[in-house]
Image (cartoon, rainbow, N blue to C red; front, side):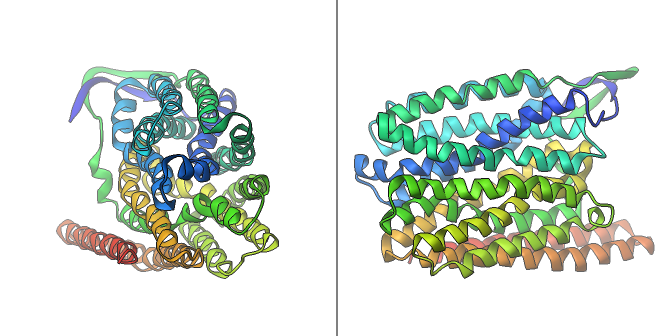
Length: 448
């Protein structure tokens, strides 16, 4: 599918100037996109009482938001390629805000799924991906630092939205909290307005064909490996933060202190992301970015597993400190690794396709964890499940990057025939399906 456009050449990334304003907008958008699905968990106890439902039912709200954030990637890519980043983000801001405002009038949990989940999630998706594309176009040499600073929006907003949500819940109830949150999400429109596109130099008057969604990026072996690893990651990455507040409240922790646990994760994450971005930009680290990312995944997984038996508030605080550090590393590196694999030209399409595949994983992970709690009344299981998935992803990414990428480079030096390389790509596709299937089966099997 494509459209006819004039052949234009975008000017080089300025690595500064208006790019810092774009970075600020990306900071806010990233904050809302990643922190909001976790921060909304402070309302879950109240919603369980209001609608007479369980942990798995309320966990679906966060999962649907994240699934829309990921699954709408191709739609966002097509719209950005056709209309540009700014108009798409303005529409997304209105949807994100409108979804929460309408959600405040919900009378059952299904209505919340459709409003706070689908509509708000779609709005955040139409803001998140274009903001990353704009950031990549404004920064090149300083891109790891820019990604790290933009990613810091997630912990900053998590630190603020969690206690704010509890405060709004205490004073106005969940309906009032949702209504005010809808108003806050209108800030996404302001962020979209500052996304000024870079000037283009017209090279030819001859029309050329531009693809709205370029599936050719899937021929990249490195991208296939990345997709497999991220699918496994997303199965468990968000589980602890989505269920942490309810876990603490069930252990007798006061509501405000329970909400503050997410703020602790956010505070640590604030420093972890930009610091990791600076380290990732070092000349001896940047070529080995996938291994650095693998280390972050292992760190996060081990934190979950080692903290599974913590039940007192002190133990939960220690968990939050280490989780915030490791989660910050993952957040700072994930899109930098993707940009390094496909480059700026293929980033829009690659990101859309990656997020679409991850949407399946995010619909499996948190609800499965919630079902475990509902059935066995044991939170320890969800930490082992989430940690095991992160550890698996880290080991797979490191080994696959070493074995397959190294083998591909070796064969490229020997000028291997193109047909053999295509066969190798299809072999990796088969492995992708097998891995995804196994991880789905592993998570779904815990339900029976």
